Length: 102
Length: 102
DNA sequence: CGCTGGTATCAGCGAGTGGTGATGTGACAG
DNA sequence: CTGTCACATCACCACTCGCTGATACCAGCG
Image 1 (tube, each protein chain N blue to C red):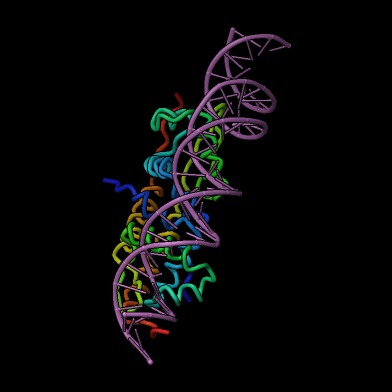
Image 2: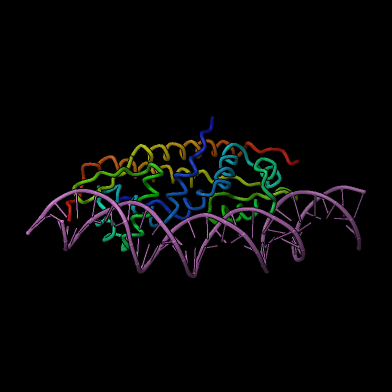
């Protein structure tokens, strides 16, 4: 069957700042201080976005002394990739599969 | 380099109704009337969403008499899939790539 | 033509969301 | 114990965005 993509994950990744965070975390595991430097956003703002990403199951936290490291969960991104690939494959066959005018 | 995912396309797909439309269009090419039946949304609402999808380059229109057929552009979805696959692959190596505490 | 039906556009309203400052919490240093 | 630092939470404001009704547009049909 055609597995529909999870709207929640996409919605979370739809925010430009969050997408930038995800892109940064795809390169290396970072803590909030690093993310503040890299993105230029306020700490409070970052913390809010990290909470959203955490609750969406996209990132994991790993305490390290007073610091909190964030790392991506690759399986979530891989799942997204697979679901979009399925959609794309299905869409290729749908071009000629046209429902009749009512 | 790590190609960042296009925020605009993701943002557009983040809406649940639009995602449902895309899922439906991945199965067959439909016109607005069909989409109204399938989603239960008002015609005006659908038309607004279709405009957003069109401007994001996700769907193409194909007039057919008085009807307007919409079909997906598979390459956009395939591109998304590839970009997420890259992110996932990069994220897998980023787990041990931890920046030092400041 | 004028009428009808399919579609697009416009203006307005209400809810949800992001940004921010103040504040709370918990861990380490001295 | 006390101060400091990293981080999280809360409350609030402003703004955006989606939904809707009214309306305009356009293609076919009689």
